[in-house]
Length: 249
Image (tube, rainbow, N blue to C red; front, top):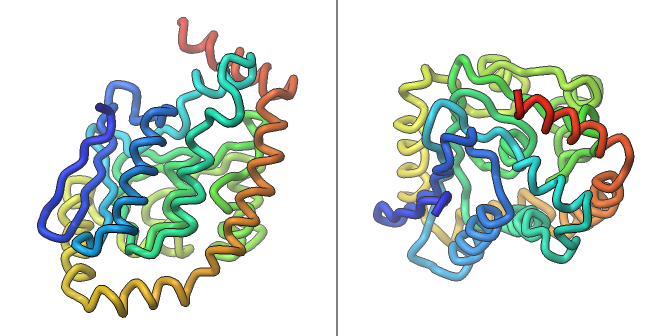
């Protein structure tokens, strides 16, 4: 299993455990994450979801082999589990805390837009190079990222693949705290415990009031339509081919 699930009192910890592949998310990992997010919505004993990762990299984004399978027709659109995961994030009322070490790419960064509290390492490197892959933003980030960091900075990150350091992530509002890498998990766990100690009903009601889930769902649907089209475009095929060649070296 590449998603390790554990419970620590009322905290549900979801650990990306594919360090040998830089925790790049596969179709199966998305399905597992979705199932756990839905469980957290239905189980009142779960007060906080904490997402962290093993290894030196938090998440290298989507496994590009899955993208290649979609582009070649080996994987149908209705089999793409990431889309369901994105909607689960948008609809989540259970607070989400995320701990980011090393680097985060693509969904590894846009996940932070759905995290209620995010802790990043001071040397973390965050990037969303969607255009470089011939793709478009996902997870509602076409709207959420400009709202969070401003249009100019968001467009530079997405269109030019500009990398953001952990220290800057806090300064521009992508994260709550920046600490040395060895302290990321500890600080995130402390935040999760603080949230878990609050009245759970009030906490979930507050999150519902602060997020328009239906509006986010609509944005994600629009993104998915274009994203799926782009996956079969010549530009994306060329980018994936270049990636495959680099992997063979």
